[in-house]
Image 1 (spheres, one colour):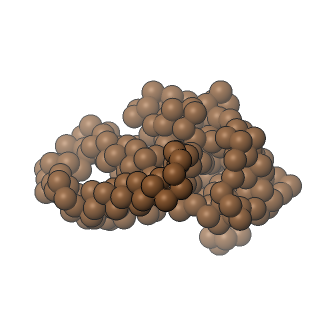
Image 2: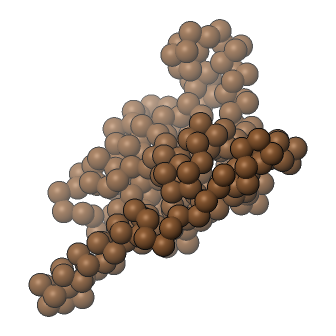
Length: 237
């Protein structure tokens, strides 16, 4: 059964501790502390190395990294089984499937309710600052000024070849799987955010990993972050 987090759950305690730390820093410095570091949201084509790029960028900036960690956090906060949440994660669910999910697993297991929990997590990360968030439509949750919005792309043929080699599939099988995942992600975004995930106007920067690897692509993200926000964490790079 779905259950709302209690008023003093682990997340609330973290929020309170962060607030106390920030207040203490202000008193010690004698001046107003800067706000939290804006986030980086990474939307990615399946097989474009977007997750690896985002993780490298997080390491270079000293930011926290959120991909499957979002699913873990929602599972902890709601008590919903993680395997069930994974079935909702960036995937298409029909109303019939949602109804079956509620009938079998209890209220709170629909994709729409899952997305509301995703929004809750992303908003919490925004308050804390300094995080890289992979997928889940995070670029549509945050205001444009609150994040560097990134889209990572790669030619379809390269993505097919890499996926086929990694998974031991034929090219035709890999093509079908890539097309299926892309279709699921596009439908997920349309259904819950009423946006087109591939529309370049939703992003500050698009990175093509055809000729550069995740580490170089992450350098591009760090440079774009500095250009947009005018600052970087100490020691970043």
